[in-house]
Length: 173
Image (cartoon, rainbow, N blue to C red):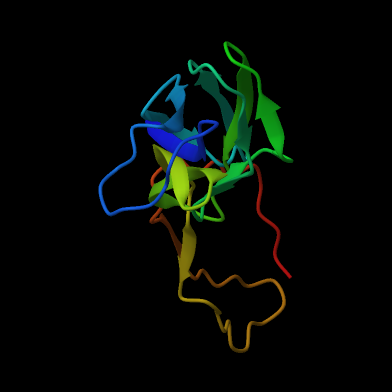
């Protein structure tokens, strides 16, 4: 990525006319990323609610660069990035979290604002796994049952999620 940071006129230069002036000096920021995409893979929400990876921004240019902000799409979260100035040759790490609010496939992007309309982008993806329990029927009526007698009713439990469901116990209320 090359970002035009600004230009200045050399001393004694002329800015008149319609053609580009050879006396103008243009600064170009050269920022590179440690990766173009992060795949968080599968996250089992019964074991953890988030996963983290780092994105590193390198300043390969000859002048300082300011990173203004970092924002991520739904299901992802960018770590705090207050305005950070990178000297030439310096780097900054930005933590990125996969923090889905439910199961499913998530795709998005991390956008790092560099200046003006310029931004660096990293594609983000991950799959959130979670069980989903359903019971059929939702309620059972045993009717009248005489003391000393028993009546049996069945309830079917189903897991419609994308990870195993472990039932540790049941209670009747």
